[in-house]
Amino acid sequence: MARNVVVVGTQWGDEGKGKIVDWLTDHAQGVVRFQGGHNAGHTLVVGQKENQKEYKLNLVPSGIVRDGIECFIGNGVVLDIRHLLEEIAKLEAGGIAVRSRLKVSPGCSVILPYHSAVDLAREALRCCDKKIGTTGKGIGPAYEDKVARRGLRVYDLFHPQSFAEKLREVMEYHNFILEHFLKAKTVDYQGVLDQAMADAEGIKPLVTDVSAALYAANAAGKNLLFEGAQGSLLDIDHGTYPFVTSSNCVAGQAAAGSGVGPGMLNYILGITKAYCTRVGGGPFPSELDIETAGAPGYQMSQKGREFGTVTGRKRRCGWFDAAALRRSARINGLTGLCITKLDVLDGLKELQICTGYRMNGAIIDALPVGAEEVAECDPIYENMPGWSESTFGVKRWEDLPLTARNYLDRLEQLCGVPIAIVSTGPERDETILKQHPFK
Image (tube, rainbow, N blue to C red):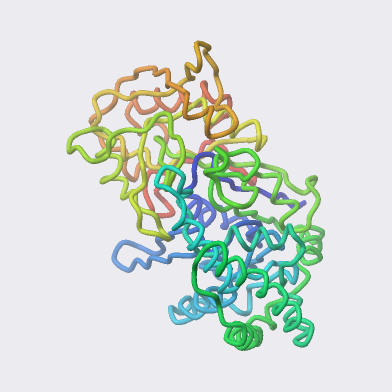
């Protein structure tokens, strides 16, 4: 009988989902990407230490580095076709078979050059404290077009005349906004059309009814792994709005974004670092100083190599926020947790955990909704002893230092979700298993 697992980030993204998806793929026959765009980034380290390869993926599901695994891009993804083709070419140049195993939904909304132009022009106009921290890759404007019912989808590429007419209409709208409101350069219609038609030839062989393919796989008893991008606290509905991404990042989107019923989702695994990070603007209650050498935040930043996979920007770092994770647990319906980057805390004499907040004279136990309220939250900390021993590469729970186990046990208690997996390094085997999501 098939068993299907959804992997979601429970913080502000960058939790290490790529390695875990890759590790879980041992027990899956298909991996599905169900939301977001090429603003997401997964870094995978594959192979033994003497012959390692590192892959940076944005759109192609992480399971692609495993032989024989089918990979699917669901309708909830906004697709920059040119970027996807370039990513495929890089993977194939590295010896990975992609085109024979990758399927793309015809329902994916297409990102085109005017989306990026609008994205960048808007961010440039925002004052410093109002900047969202967008990657400027056109993700938000593409989702706007989708909701406004003026967007173009992959299946439109199969109808060139109709595509050209729809493109002209939508570009008249966006070029007007670019010129008269955003005071930016317009985008050439013919150039966009020619490039889109050229790219269409590269993607057409990959297009299939992903919903039907997933139902068929499930009926055949194949295990499926649904791979989320970004993190739950960046969700357009449930995150620290407006400092959020443009899609739903929560587990429920796995159904809507791939065309399956929620009854097919059997286990929800939430990925979280042993501390917190955030890229871009927005409130961050447990944030620490990352610039002062010797400070805990500096260690997290440097030892954790906290730089954005897509942008290269420094990630802001802070203590583990159990109150924020409680909200993530509720909105995702988490079955289990995976804790990553525990080793980054090695050597810190004292650790702090945010257990709740003081806000306007009241004590609250979960992250509130909306950026304004979150910005008013003062964290309440609980202190715990750290450990001097190394946890890097540890593969058994009992081999962790007692204080590290106590720390993890406390996180589990505070969040109300059992820990299923602990990742202790970037390689596949640097993993502690307590409960297997596929079993």
